[in-house]
Image (cartoon, rainbow, N blue to C red; front, side):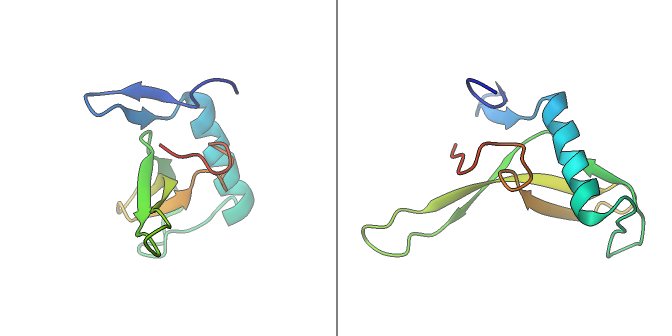
Length: 100
């Protein structure tokens, strides 16, 4: 994949995943969680991958160490809405160490 790894939309240029990236995320979820992974809140086994990438920021650890940002995917239970965040690089959706 060359260029910017996702589409940018909206006034804040929120990263939006393409269909093929959603497919990669769903396959990763099935491979690593199992085909019938159940929600810990309601026991339902259908999940939705959010299209927008969320960036989490850890605080700086010192004066010379900047904050670290992590790209995350939103994974929500289709039944109760329980939402988990999954590292987008580890899931194979974005390049390793991707930063906004």
